[in-house]
Length: 254
Image (cartoon, rainbow, N blue to C red; front, top):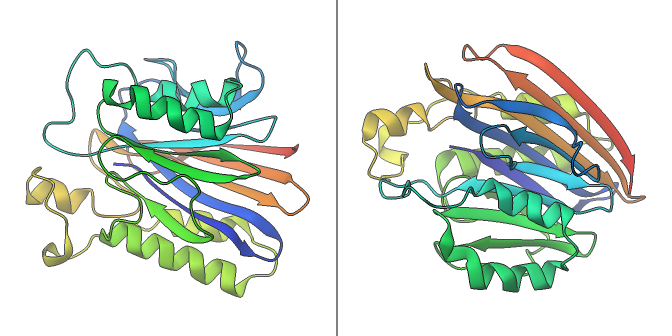
């Protein structure tokens, strides 16, 4: 499971506020966010197994974030890594519109995914498992391992938390967003989705911050882009016990 929530043009000082958790098996190797040696315009964490990423920005102002679509038949072998979709957009020169068209032609090659991507002109959403959106509307949105703004409890609650922060804060303190991302509350069975994984797994994955023995929230990321196109990129990494193992900070003028 992964989770992100973002606010588009919903705060007087920020054109984008984004908070995201990456959930993954702890045995899968990954590097914290940095500028990539082989693509120095990309600032992102890196999946060291397949070479892609789950969330990143470029020095030219591109942004992309990926979640996998969760389901019992969503792990077909022999498919290309979905993390390349983020990296390809960040380092490529296709416009968001042309990349959207590219995904329409090629998206079925991959296991299920949802991709939020764009630049200063706006954000877009593409999924190969349901309706896609070119030009996401102004407001607060959320994406976990289903469709954009699906009413899973964790999606509903992170959106509500982000809305409270942007409504009540003049200058956003990233700590408030990290606190939102750290919520380990599990929800009652009657509100949980039925993805076919079984109730025990649904319970353990229902929280905003996931903790399981071999799988859980590996990192939390906060991105702020203000009205002067100054970007703040903060990331915290965690171990299997949920303890912080590192923090990185980057500040860019786009």
